[in-house]
Each structure stands twice: as structure tokens, then as C-alpha cells.
Length: 365
Image (tube, rainbow, N blue to C red; front, side, top):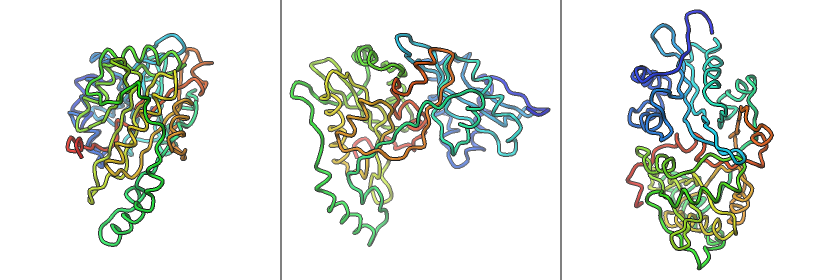
């Protein structure tokens, strides 16, 4: 970095100054600097050590001019589980760019854990920076879409536009009714209000068939999907008796000015791969819930062949995605750089965390 600038790890005493910096650089996205959201994001994560947070700041004197933030998690690589960070936010004050700040912050983050992960886009310009530092692009994470009410998805407005929207949706009804296989009679699909020890048992089984996957245990999933401020997720589970065989997490966007939900996202989908029935049953139930709410389209981002196959069986089609899975690791590079080994969903990246809040009012919409 140029003279007069320094980079170091964040401490709790920097919190107010950092929130002020985030309010300034994300002036069009006030949630980034909202104290409640920030505390949930970085302090309430069950993996967090408050004295050793994976956040780094750049300063010009006493003023924060750059910031790199990650969250801690664990990733299973082969048969072993390793502490890991997902880099979520790297931003430099526009008046301080091209002065080596981003490179310095990434360098500090790389010293923190042996495995570092990120989901990036070329629009963020960070892939080029990370590649220059030895990071590897494992693969673009595919995006899948299922149209349900295309008028609701793409036509907004009142008057004539409302008529067009309803007409398009009516004409599409013959396609909308074609769902995949429903769940087998031997299992039941029902809502999950809280992840518990049954989730941990599911993780123990499902993780055996995934080579590289972020650990999905109850404490982390509850933090992510039931404790996030001003977000409401719908979670459906597939049960055989009391055994959890899989779950799917849905996020419905808040209705627009016409009361229409333009899009819903499948944030996560984990299932035991013994048969197709569990995955098909969960996706079918999610689509039926989306149809009840007249959602325009359902989207998801996922890298995992069995999950992608299940989406295709249930009417989803692949679209272009800007999301790049990037890795820098000294551990098992032959495994961790092989895209066929990875299980990544939308919930593994900042795509879900920084989704526009839908508010609690959307629960019974």
C-alpha cells in the first residue's frame, strides 16, 4: 500500500467506525450498515470467536477506507472437516482505489484459515485480483429457473400492463400444471420450524456422498434461516416417520406495488441420495407452494450433479450465471479444485445473505 495507509484485523472497538464506513460506501443499501443485521452476520454466527473475527480494515490515519469481511464455517473435504472462511464483502472507498489496499486485505485474510472460499462475479472485479494471488476458479455455479406465472415474473404495472400480465399467466397455465413426481407414500413433506438433532443425522448421511461441502448442522442452519433479521424463509422437510431424509429452503421476495411476488429462490436443498423420491418430493412441494402464492418464477444456483438432475426432472432449465466458485487452499488440491466433487447452493454464498429483505409480513402471504 502507499504511504500513510495501513491494514489490520478488525476489533470490536472498530464497530461504530466500520458501520459508518459501510453506510457511506453502501449508501444505496442501508442494510449493510444496519447494526442488527451486522451483529447477526458477524457476531452471532455460531462459529464466531469475538476476539478473532475474520474482518480486516484499511485505514488512512483514523479513517477506515477499505474493508474485507468473511464468515467462518467448516468444509468437509474428502473425509476430513476443516475450518474455512467464505469471503463475502470486499470494498474500497472510491477515492482510495488502485493503491494496493485490496491486495493487502486479501493477503491478511489468506493467513487466517487454510481453506478460503468465495463466490464472485466479474462485475465485482475481484476474480482478477484473486487469480493474481493464486486463487483458482473451480467453476461457474449454474443457475436454474422454473417459470410458473411468466406475466408476474416479467410484466409489472397497472392498467393495460395488468391485463397483459393476467393474459400471459392464463395462457401459460397448461405448462404450470406439469409438476414432477410427488413424494412417495412412505414419506411425508412437512414444514420445519427449527433444525434439530435430526438435521445433524441427515448431515452425517448426506455428506458421505459429497466430496466438498460446507458443513450443514442444526446450529448453523438455524442461524442462517431462522435468526436472520427481517428475513422469512420457508423450510420443508421430507420425513420417514421422524427421520429427516432431506430439506429444501425457499425464499419468497416481498410483493411488488401490485401485490405480485415476482421471484422466489431455492436457497438450499440437501437430501439423501438413496433414491430420486426425496429430491423430487421436496422440489414438487416447493413448486406447489410457489404456485399457491402465484410466484412468477423460482430460481436457484447449485453445483452438484444429482441436485441439478433433480431440478431438470422437475421442469427447471439452466440459464447463464455470473457466479464463480473460487478457492485458495493448501489442503487436498486434487479434490478441492475438482468441480465434480463440489456441492454448492445459493445459501453458501452472499447471494442469499444479501437478498433484499422480505419482512415478516410475507409469512402468510
